[in-house]
Amino acid sequence: MAALLMTGFPGFLGSALLPRLLARRPGEDATCLVQERHLPLARQRLAEIEAEHPEVLGRVSLVAGDLTEPGLGLSRDDRAGLEQLAEVWHLAAVYDLSVPEEVARRVNVEGTARVLELCHELPALRRLQHVSTCYVSGSFAGEFTEEHLEEGQEFRNHYEETKHAAEVLVRGAMEGGLPATVYRPGIVVGDSRTGETQKYDGPYFVATMLRRQGPLALMPRVADPDLVRFGLVPRDFVVDAMDALSLLDRSRGRTYALTDPDPPSVRELVDTFARHLDRRVLWVPLPQGLTRTVVGLPGVGALLGAPAESVDYLASPTTYGTAHATADLRGTGVACPRFPDYAGRLLDYMRGHPEHTAAAMV
Image (cartoon, rainbow, N blue to C red; front, side, top):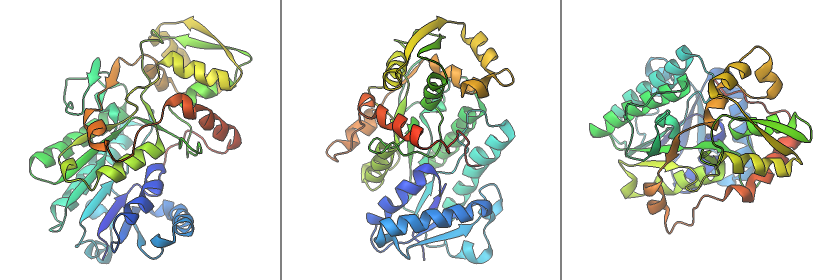
């Protein structure tokens, strides 16, 4: 019988997190809920994990299912095999700024509702570990703390809106007594030690814009680049933090913002990438709305390597409080690396792996 269920495998976070969780849970096995069409990739990824972490061998089962279907789309036998679950890790979501509303709502909101239905049926459940995002903040102006959630904020895209709606569901279940912890990563980039990633979005859009221009690169100045902060975070910190926090008694009922507590400004981000790419930046003042419209024109976004939705994050009015995460990680040895220390590795990996794109798993 599996003690741990994970959704979102073989995604970017889940693939790195799974062996870490099993290492801390000797004697426990895991089941990963995987869409039928992603099973070949999941089997490949699991084989790679088992080769690198022999202690995982034979402890992970892959089952075909679908978050959006009743009973998670599981067969009767697979569903029966989950009765002794003690822990559910819900990572599955559509991580895409341009995702259509229907898809975002079906996966991010209805999928979370199905997971909560399962959790309420598990007599041995000790914790739901729900992975949300800092960007449930929408366009909130000021510091968005780990206590904040429903603050009357507006949302810039369906991704933000539906991840917020999903977290509202989880918060309601927690208030009703469900044992749960919520993790809000910032914009997740590659591993700070190797640069490894699965897709190029977020700050990679900035790198792509710079790379596709000559030695003098134009960058739209849609807001003061010294005041706007870019809430990125490397994957290894997010995985290490969730791993460390998940077994703490005090983390039950808490929400953690897993992002850089001292994030780079937009200017620092652009200038750091530009130095590594041998570019000189010329900032061009442009209204945010006009820039978004131009980038959204047919072919323009593809030419620049950035969707129109990404423009909004160059003018985001939000910063993120990390008080809970900082306090509860103290003494664990887990801390967020500084962006200038690993930025070059992100770009080196990007240059060496042109096969990756910005496409999300759906």
